[in-house]
Image: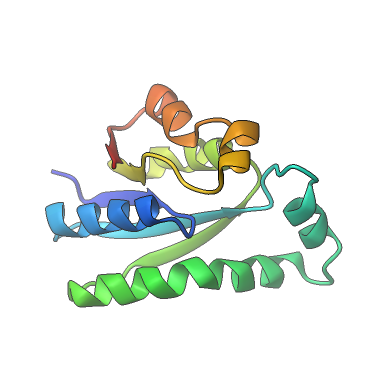
Length: 139
């Protein structure tokens, strides 16, 4: 039985679908929404911006709020509360560092802009190939 699920999310439609899938198919599981900030970008913008903040942790939580608020609203439609976590760094690496704490991972097949996908690579593919726990990729 799957009792703890990690749902990595950005602000994409695919990430929203992944959370919806997890909530529909695992109604009794604890769901944690993970948002990774400060990952690679074409000009290093987000990582540099966070590094220059007086309080990078607060800045990261503030940026993650744009992902967490809709995730909480969606979960509320299912009568569920989700936990939220923020990590720093490369998305695939940050996700893989956390998956051992969960029974499964549910993530969107892709997210972000085309430029981000070209630079960063396919996060879903990396997680799928390297995860020690089952991974469901939602389209």
